[in-house]
Image (cartoon, rainbow, N blue to C red; front, side):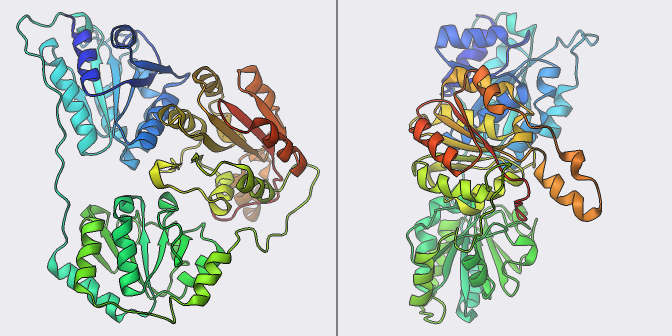
Length: 539
């Protein structure tokens, strides 16, 4: 057996059935072995950075470890932004990177892959000998699960053809260490109980890290008379609760803003509390903030907190409930507030703009709210355009149904993450929102979407430029033409690459397009020309 075959066997032993990537000299035969001998599905992207994003999107949608492969040198170098996103998101992911022969430092594609991997992915596992190849694969998968985060598994091209020594015992799949749920200290619980007793208007704010603790946090809120809210990435976690305010943050709706402005205590559970969650201090300016997180390093790291509790969200919520006498706060959790929450309409008070250049993006999102299937995966890319679906469209994040790869602020993420999510969860359609400038950084992945055939509706909100830069230039006296570009027929481009596409310029054409494209059973694209003068201040 060759080392490359041992690596393929070990990868499959870790439950891998899908791998994303781009072929090159240093990984092509490994991929061929995985496909031909193990029947692994290979999703071929057109760009290495997009391939890693697809694997990340697949992992976020499925909850499993994503796997991707690239070739040596430039293949790995191109993937740096995507690895950084996955690292900041804590996505378990193994990138199998081919490498040049160690004995050929003058190879044209020679590149210091280890320091690059450490600077981006943050973890590097080299395969150093055929006898240890299977073990090294296991170490990479274990590291990806335990961190969690991306790991670069480095495989020199010449080593893949070397024979595994006779008598080498196959390495078993390495099982990741799963620590027990972290309990808070008695002192920390007592302090939080005291704060809740003293508070008059408490709020419990849950993030993505508290999804498994939803019932316990909800029970604590009912026990102590608090209202509930979530971050964007935990949207819908408390759906149906009469005192659930919805998403808190820069994209909070008017009612949520009004209520949170009155809060005197905000307790966060599993939330990446940052300046956007607090809307730069404008969202709950009078409140003391207590953060509960399993990672002590996260407490107050991105936004100041008055107290931090190291503990699992569910364990902490249960411990506080057990120590706290039940309390009613009729002036806070009132029937009037429940009625306002039930009747709230995100489109109330909006004066839609009419124009020949396109449709008001808010009017288009209102149509989306009515026409899109409720059971879907929603992907929102990075840019000003993302503010509209995030603010106005209800996109529950439960069951991994909301993907927002904003961690590194990189554009060009919407389409590849949607492809990955569609491959990972073909049981429900994916609706991805992307901008024109963002899409144009990776048009080749429209071809990938067409070839894969995943149920993805790509919605391109086209304002003819980089909307955020245009909006920021004007107050500083800079000509916004620097960030504007000529109109392009993106629908025609999509069709030329095999993706059915429609152009939307007004409400009538939007309705007609939805009539034709629904239900979403395969690739679709909506090219929506939006009015550039309608801008989103918070995104």
